[in-house]
Length: 309
Picture 1 (cartoon, rainbow, N blue to C red):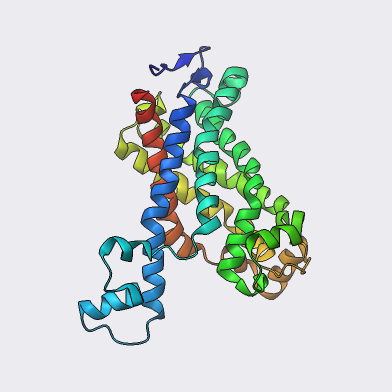
Picture 2 (cartoon, rainbow, N blue to C red):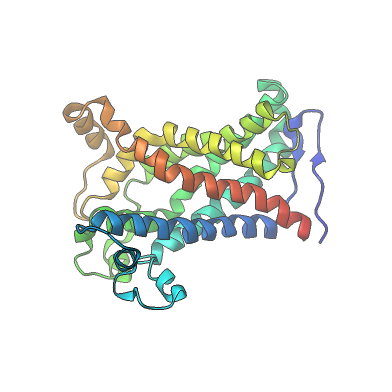
């Protein structure tokens, strides 16, 4: 199927529908999620194993043993796959999240362009309206991301509070806990709305004002890369306070029912305002590159796949 060119539906730039095919959106976003896992999960595993090593690494042989442990003498392909411990539902969550967010935002964006594009232009001005429409579509899709919350809860508990599992498997936990796995859904939605607004809005703003692009899909890979840096940095900073609250709610033991407002009150009272930005620097240094990479890849691959189909 030949790609469909952008279809202007009105005089304002916000009314232009950038018609990528559904297959291109799913393939581009899914590939970005898989590539993110393939590249950054092994890096994270290596970093943790090096940090956990208490001895001196005096040779490449010893380095190989620290990184690959008992698999150090096996062929490289086998050694490589040992760098994916505990992937499981973390992989399922990440790939589904990327498909949903990066592949879903264009559908919401097209709906807004078709039915409300003129309103965005009249309210915010031509150009401004288009960037804000992209951000609004991102915010809407970000709120809907709570459907994947159980996978996120299990991933966070495994990372920060593994004792909560008490030897139970995932299916047993789902059966035992039920809708308790959606605990913190309101705070997750409250964190995702501004975070996704900033992610897609920051990227759109960079393309609109830095590169003066009227068709965002025409951006080069480098322009997409710069736009992704702008969007991911803005997203992490804007969502940081509520992200801390969400994480503290989700990493509690399953039987703990402490509300978000109580968590906020304790944080403010015992730790001060800076508590709401705890972990921001590591997130910018570690999560920032991952988010930038996957967002850049999705923005580059979706138009590329669309041209091929």
